[in-house]
Length: 399
Image (tube, rainbow, N blue to C red; front, side, top):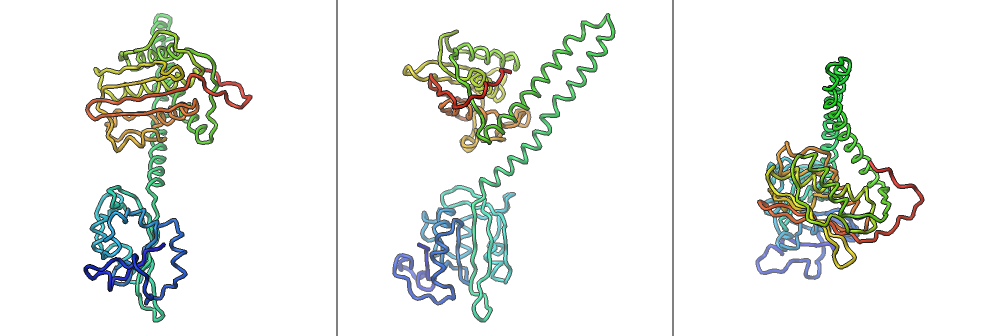
């Protein structure tokens, strides 16, 4: 039910909130029919009188602000609510009470669709889009304000990540093209001079390496679109995870020119998985561990069969660790760790997003545990026998 308060009486010490007693006759012009309508709204609604005191709210508003953790919220003044919620602009500057839309609406202005950063009474920051409109009586005098709040935290985060992705993608996809062109032109000149033909081989290798990087970036974008369209298919077949782990890890050690400790048998971890996609999971996790840990730190990959029906793969680094507030977002698309310097933030922010999708397609699970100053561990658990996909399409060719 909507929360109704009567500031004239509820402000008296020792009196219980009006919402806990039978509501008295309303003296404001709001029809009682509005109560169920407001309560049914998914957006948070708060109606205040001309003094800024709360007249009516709905349950959605209580959830947005975690207001039920502090019942006095419903009997507070606008200034007191401002102190509780710490409203800020999106760039972090505090918004004083006189600039709140509810106060501006008391001057006769209608404020529409403004974003504000608010700290709920549970301590969590939220981005709320809010609008405020004055309420008039029959004499056209302003007697209150109705303010509507909508939680757009996730939406704004996704918008920011998309903007970042477009910026990053433009850079990352262009970055390999210049060295490919330069190396190809230099190789062409060397090949035209018989005495210098031997110098062309390293240049050709550079072309291959940068082309592979560009191909990997494009493959990541393609995988992202498949995941979004629920078209990321796997094609399980009997394979040895031990061999896949060693081959994928060896490829990353060559790429990063750093050793990785492998703690698993040379062979014998048999099961039914998509070998190409399993390789991709290992390569992504090992690459991440090498990218985000200091050059001389230890990176370990281990694997074993557990309980006779599960494959456990563990990738551990002894890097700086990941802040707790970043952990919930690690597997989201476009996300790149904010705690690392720009030099460590190459890529499109799709590796872990794709890794989780592949693991889930195998009916598996992936977990992360990280301690600042100690390191990070990713654990993948896969059933030994992945259900076959219900489709006739041929499996993709291995890259």
